[in-house]
Length: 396
Ligand SMILES: Nc1ncnc2c1ncn2[C@@H]1O[C@H](COP(=O)(O)OP(=O)(O)O)[C@@H](O)[C@H]1O
Ligand SMILES: [Mg+2]
Image (tube, rainbow, N blue to C red; front, side, top):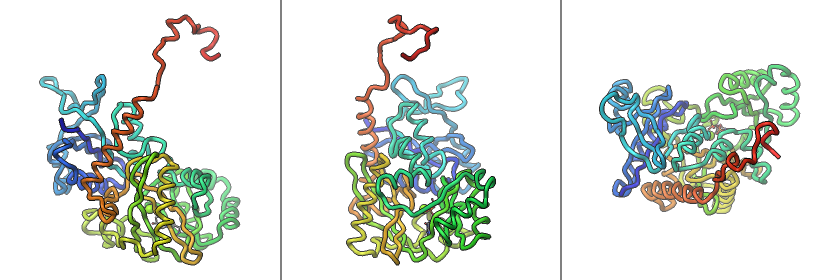
């Protein structure tokens, strides 16, 4: 029997459209002899849908028409099975649409890449592709991520972080802290978004205040980083899990001097027409990165370490900034559900997309088998043994 794979995509994230592209690409490249694919699209308002029309990218141009001909669904757990049911349940006829063996989340950013979806899948008892709750959420928060990497001896840029309420309360003290420990220029970021949303550079106090104000509209937690002025941006993908993981070839991202905006990144720089139709491929990049063999090796080694320190699984992309003046390599961030699942880095590494998708599903099933052998509860009922009495409290 074929393994039934539910590809979950869309989602309540600024990267919704990119997710649609990444997911449909992944579906196209899965081996249909081995896998039966069930598309599960989450709309921007959080409603789940399925249906064959969802497999055609053209259909998304008229979203309301697409949703009109698609089926709203809900996942339910029934014994050991996870079932896709029509929602609302029909009064007559069956609600059952399909059963799922493994979920394949392809949602970038909030609610999809940050552990929220992963937690939901855990509760459903459904094996799933990619990072678990802890690695997803750690990777999503730029501050927590830096704490963990710093502790592990992985190089990150110097930073100051605070909640926007702290900033509002004592701006002067924070400015002093930033100026004393970082100096200008700095980069200001919301701690937990993606796609450069809310990120800006500040070269003086006025710009700093403006940048923090902007970032605060997107997140309550802000990180201010030392800006690397003469840099090479290099990304490297890692595939595997805590036991074994491999690095891909590196890509060099060609920026202009400005931070790539959301529209630069996804609309090929035009910023207006075209929308997200080209996805990640429209960013200017050189593969493999032209940084020489030694630097490539260094980046790949740090990438694998960064992946395994967080306990990642599946495929991630680790983004680096190389300071050309000092030749030092810093981790900028990890993307635990990278755009296009980084397939374009795996193909030149010698792994076609179909093989990548296969590896990802097999890693998910491996983790599920390993988890099955762990004990999550104790079968004996302490109440029936008469060991617990309400009055004295439960703990000894
Ligand atoms: N410390 C920095 N110095 C110089 N440029 C930076 C720095 N941090 C980020 N950038 C630029 O901003 C871009 C977006 O920042 P990043 O942290 O990757 O945010 P996102 O999660 O939105 O992708 C990077 O790709 C890089 O071009
Ligand atoms: Mg980035």
